[in-house]
Structures are given as C-alpha cells and as structure tokens.
Image (cartoon, rainbow over all chains, first blue to last red; front, side, top):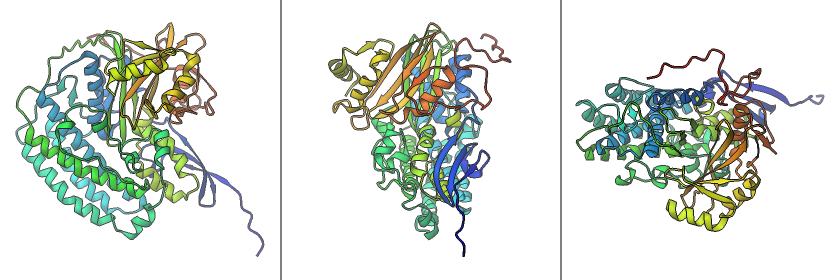
Length: 367
Length: 156
C-alpha cells in the first residue's frame, strides 16, 4: 500500500456548537484527531455591560449585572451590592444576610446541577440532564415565589434584599434541600462508577496546581487540583463564618475530580442552607438606602465565591449617583484562558470533556 | 495579615516604589509609577512574606486627563489581597505587560488594549478580542466615545 499523504488541517469548532455553552469559537489545528493548537475566539456575546453601567445609577446597575453571569445571577447581584456597600459603609440587617446566604447557596446548587446535566450530555449521557434539571426546577420554584423571576433575579439589593420571603418559602426550601440530599445518591450512582464516564474523564485534561494559580483559575476547577482556597472562608464576606461546613477539594486535577468537587460542594451547600434556615432571625430585610444612593469617593474590588470561581466587581466612585467605572471579572474568563494550555496534545473528543468540566459559560467571558 | 499589617509590610519592603493612596476601601490601594511596574510586580510575587501569586483583576479607568490601570492581586498561601494602580498619560498611554509574571494577565491586557486603546509593551498577542473583526470605530470604553445611536437615560 502506498504511503498515505498526511497534513495538518484547521477546524473551526463553533461559534454555534452545542458543547461550547454559549457562543465560543475554537480554531483548532489538527493532526488527525489530535489537537495541536487551540485558539479561542471570544466576543460573540459582548454587550458592553460595563459601559452601560456607567450611564446608570447604582440601583439601576443591578439588573444589568444579572445578565453578566445569568446562571448564577444571585451572585452577580450580590457582588455588586457588596462592593457598593463597602464603598458607602452600609450595615446590612441580620435577616437580610441570612436570606442572601440561602439564595446564594441555592443558586450555587442550581448551577452545579446544570453543570452535572450538561457535562454528561456533552459526553453523550442524556439521563443525568433530566435528573439534574428535575431538582433544579424546585429551586427555580423557590426563586419564583421569592422574586418572581426564574433567571435574572434582581433580588439582592444594596443594603439588603428586595423583599421578605413568603410564608410558604421555608417549608418548601426544607423539602427541596432534603430532596437534593437524597437524590445526590442517584446522581453519584448514575455516573461515579460508570465505565464510560471513567474512561472519558479520568486523567483527562489534568490541570497542575501551579498552572492553575498562574492562569488565575479559581473555584471548583482550582480546588480539584488540590489547592485549598475558597473565598467564602479565605476572603470572608457575609456570614459564612457562622456555619459549620468544609471546603471541598480533590487532588488529581483531571475532569473526573472537577466533577466530584462540584458534587461535594452541593452537599456542603445543603448543610449551609439547613443551618441558615434554622438560624434565620426576624427583623428588617433592607437597610435604609436612598434611591439617590451616592457612595463617597473611593474605589474597591469586591470578590465572592461563585459556582464558577472568583466573581469580582471593581467599582470606582466619584461621589455622584452613577458609578464612574465598573469592571467585572468572572471565573470563566480565566478558565477559558487556560483551556489551550491543558487541552493541547489531546484528542478533539477530550477537548469537549475538558471544556465542559471547567464549567465555562460565555456571557461571563464576553460581558 | 490584616489590611493594616499588609500596608506596613508593603511599605517596609517597597516603600520607595509604592505610595499608599487613601481611595482604597477594605483593601489597601497603592500607586506605582509605570517605570517601576515590572520590578515591583516581580517582588510582590516572589517575596516570601507577600507572595502575591494570584492575579485577580485588571481594569483601566479613563479619567479624561489621564488613564489608570488598576491591578488586583491576591496570595493563595497568605490569603491577603492588594490593589495597586499605575497612572498613564492620556495622549500616549503605554504600559508594560505583566504576563511574564502573571500569565493570567494576558487577556486582561488584550481587553485593555482594545477597549481603551492603551498600548501594551511586550505583549505577544494584541489582536481583536471582544469587538467584531471589522470594528473601525475607535476605543469604546473611553469616556469621550459615544455610540452612534446612544441616547441618554432621563435623569431620575
């Protein structure tokens, strides 16, 4: 048989590709099925949120920030409010802090359930998607009864939360977390020891801890590499120090460990929510904040632990009612930056698994 | 370290190159001259007591008569955080790339180059980033830039 003529070729993966979780284009240089070079092209979802915020008052910015990272919009509301509160030194009432923690953790669980379903679907298993979204629906019901929205919540405000929870919230929330705690066994049973899942994830896309830190990878993706760093504990905000919970870490840094860390985090979030429900005090839910809110001159960068890592907002105030500059930072921005480092040299099918396991969503990158 | 201890530690080690500003809230904010950026960044990362190995954020601010590049860095081991800014000339804004020190800065610098028109020296990849490929309308995050169809919201 004569020698086959081989050559490298370039493949466009995306922008409209189901496993790019938004609109992301990867320009791949391929040798057969092997990926030699990855160039991410972003910007398809650029809506210039930061520029829009410059023309809004502080309270008007919060619904804009909902669109920044829409899978966990509560965190976006929260981090902007946190930065504004630090600028103006506003004390938040006890009950509001508890409600915020409950909402943030519920949102984290909802986001990790999306991750659970979508990652499995990218790799070819459809069932986990149905399981994950079924329980997420209960959380969406909780959000809907609290703030009327299922996606862009606009619930957490500067100085507290928009309004108190309805009476039926607490029993339904207790039911939801106990259902999730129980169903976690099902989730783990479906995938943890599934031979196909193991082959597709174990030792794939290994992220060494030093590379992760150098590229600014954060959140569960970094903790899966053995770096014990969680902003809820290490850069304290809100009232997380009052609850008994553990930071979930794993050591291998492969796709499988990134998946396990997220399941562990769901368990910890369930613990936090149960304790917060037990300790929920009575009282006001919002500090007195004028609609003409004007923080004094100054600047601050606030960051919180989101389901995708470090979510940060930098605000510079010039003493007027509009922020002079808002800069947002999302975990996916750095996770996508590290993708060429850990994805090069592998197979194109593994690239899909790595992309999914880093839990990248594109609105957070493009803003 | 608490923010006050951190202020003293940074002032003790790099006091001649970094000056403390009073605009920072919660976390100390320093100012660095553009010429000193690389040496200061390297000491911040490598000093055993500071060890700012984690790059959080970089954003430019257009102050109409000057630019500010605001960096936020953190330490994974010591769990403290620091902000610093570099003041740039408005007519010819130019700054050194810190991606050799913190590789994560790469995309943040690309974004700053594209949206603010700040030139990044020694950056390996200054290409179109967030804006469309055929964009020819300048640097949209500058304060004097208005979109063609821009309408101001009514004042509250």
